[in-house]
Length: 295
Image (cartoon, one colour):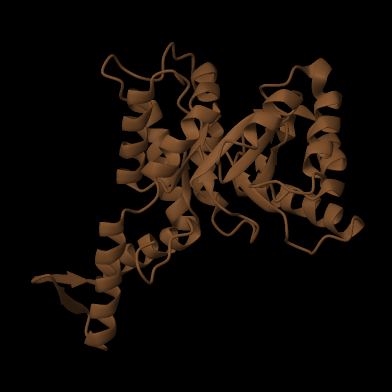
């Protein structure tokens, strides 16, 4: 789950274009990018898209937030078409995730879908309450496949004019929300997915944003334009060097037996290095790289 591309669900043209993007996950958006008058049409188009026979990516649906009263209509429309997952915006803690999980279980039972087959990806920082409650998501549902965050809705709620400073870094409150997402994801034992980069024409700034996110522990990033997808995939795919080093760390610990340290390239490594190496190899596997030869 490196690249997650948002696509307005009411645009058949954009949905068809998204099929050629190379994104790991397509997110059919029923929320922010769709006007209220277009919600029903967006649901209809989303269902038609989900029922295509050959889609080269997993497909999630971003439903409208629970507080809008539109979530049940969204689920009733799309669940018969079996999306791989549901993105829950403005998720205000574990209680919201558990509620969505219960709703999904009912729909799965009604439509002959395996119990638990539909994943949940919450956006956990779009309200002030959500930021404070992010830690409660751990253990809320076995459907949880990751956590992601958003800055734009939070900026509107708190009245911030911008989310970044003149140097391009996040201002304090948004840096805090980003860090809380990383910590909450680690606590829940799921991947942390970085938020969108709205200036989609600024490829240099976007590439830098991706590198920073990967450095800090995010394993993927959301995109708002197909042109961003190759940059995300490159940034979040482990290099051959990283894969090779990780493989040697794992092998060294296997040789070390019960000892808590091992030697790799003349340096001592301990358990945190092993955990990091195992995660890199798992990311390589999910990206389709052959761990036997680095490709």
